[in-house]
Image (tube, rainbow, N blue to C red):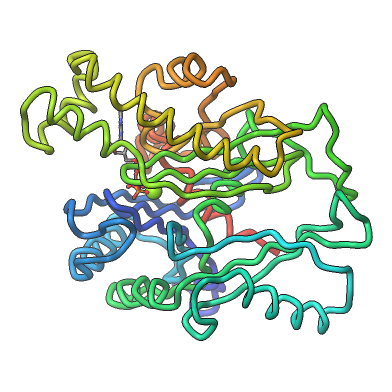
Length: 360
Ligand SMILES: Nc1ncnc2c1ncn2[C@@H]1O[C@H](COP(=O)(O)OP(=O)(O)OP(=O)(O)O)[C@@H](O)[C@H]1O
Ligand SMILES: [Mg+2]
């Protein structure tokens, strides 16, 4: 026992998503990051609908269960918000003093945020000198509806937890991508104006009800979007094609993938492709000169057999899977290391949140 340990000052990542709670706590060892606690607890299907907490008791009970299973060393949580309640905009402002910057941000927020300023939490961070104009700075403005964060705070408090960081799903994705082997873009201190050799990667997290997209040009976030499409759409297609309950369709998808009717898969992929094309079109409307060269997939749908080949063939873009667990030490005394590695792609958001612990 230690009364004076500042362990309690740490933070764990908790992803509260439609299919369940994912908790990850990391520590930094001599050879990189170690997994110190982890839990996944399922939620009933109607507990969270389109990112809104409907059944707060179910969610706080799942949080209590996750804490009981994982036994984290802290009560502090980094959580993520995404979907329509969050607005993320990159704005270009003249390089100026901090005081002037805050005034400008408040002005810009008024222009870009379609909600009353009193109803949102506002934040911003400076990305760096603008590539187009060295006199200007790129600043990312984030606004999230107050009631959404308050709902999360409420369920966390019910479970005896405390929200210390609120992140956006797309930022957590970027954080976790940085510790993978595949996505190794060095962000230079002096951001170079991107040219035709620019690395343009899209991080795409496909969950059950939504996907988060973050396009990075030379490692700098250039476009983000959340869309409602995901594994749930495939489960519903299976449900229709096989005339079975949602629950059985979900089981078939995960345990007997090869038995799935080809039409169900085809419909799912047609839908997924058109949603992705829609987002990539939005992106290229502003950055046509930097086409996306690689897709990095994560989320539960990244576990679908052959998804990379399917998307490569349908979109004509190199596609690979990101696994944040690949470079995290997983003590086999405590965890089923093989299983955790296999499920790694589904843990991008909670890992990205847990990495907040090491922010300076
Ligand atoms: N082995 C698997 N094969 C295929 N699909 C899988 C597998 N494991 C999980 N999935 C699917 O992945 C989805 C869950 O992924 P994830 O945990 O990323 O979603 P979520 O974060 O709960 O949902 P959201 O963020 O969309 O609210 C479900 O649709 C599930 O059926
Ligand atoms: Mg999710």
